[in-house]
Length: 150
Image (cartoon, rainbow, N blue to C red; front, side, top):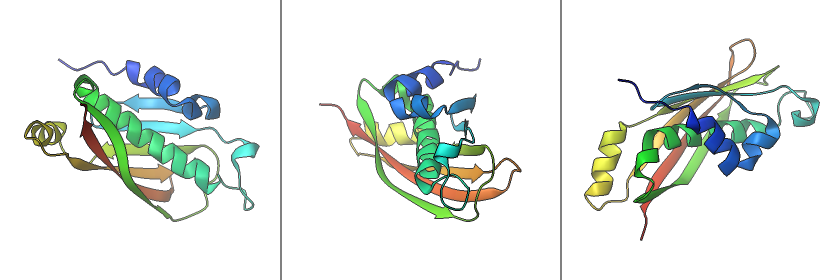
């Protein structure tokens, strides 16, 4: 039986107003993978005509947050997810709609087992950003942690 992740897009748009303001679309949502898109709008572009670096970073971070929500939502009563750090490598100027695919870098069960043992886990979410032609324009690693609620 597969889990229903239909709540993730609405939860992200309500909890992260930037996602709703920018018009991010949630294309695919699963327990360990999320795909989102940022529309191609003139006000998002930089001086060379592609999405501004802040828009690119924001899209990738939003995708990573959505996969974390999908993977760990049933554990939010005991822990709060927080970004510990993030690294991005810009590879090429994007053109058109920007897409981010975020993939959980460790099995959720392994992360929860670490949390349950009393350790504050860290885990990566790997994000590939591609343009309208499918060309990789940036890559990110967003490292998340689960902070135990007290």
